[in-house]
Image (cartoon, rainbow, N blue to C red; front, side):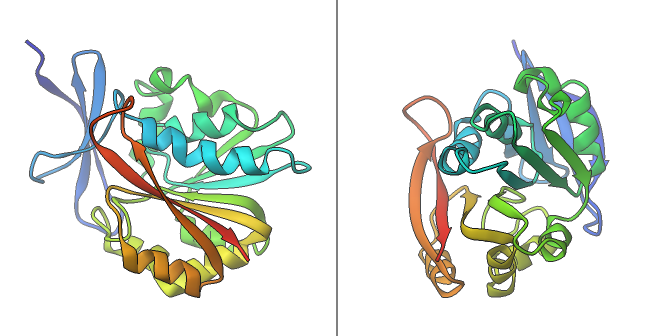
Length: 226
């Protein structure tokens, strides 16, 4: 019988909480310490994380030397998907705030996602994605955000800024002409779609399966800079 085996715990900066990495049979699971026992992510169900990168990267792959930014490393599946759907001249920058998550992807999680951090096109920074956005005006062809459970910040209140009008305006400034912002969420949010429009994006709300073609579905906003 499978059971959860705690492998490691890492603090969430400026939060006071922590993330826990568990082994569950052949899979790995990340949970919030002291939470309701719910899973933030696991290595078996990552279809929506794959789609978060596949949809925008397919749209910008033909551009000359496309450069994309991923907010949140997670279990590495979004990074792996971005690399899969971009050519050899692309650059994929990942901003991850929790150093322990980076170490987990160098260790037990890396193999599950195909070790995307070893790809020379990938660069992973221990940094707040908000700071990267502000520092690089018109620096990216696409931006993919998966730093929390969606517009309602779960793991860190500071993440709420990214989904605010100020954060979305910063994303627009960091994108090149006709750049694409993709945002992952565990659930739909009509008000967030309206915020994207006010920030200068033409947005589409896409529903994708977490695993396979049935069961739980997540929301991805695909927003093109007008």
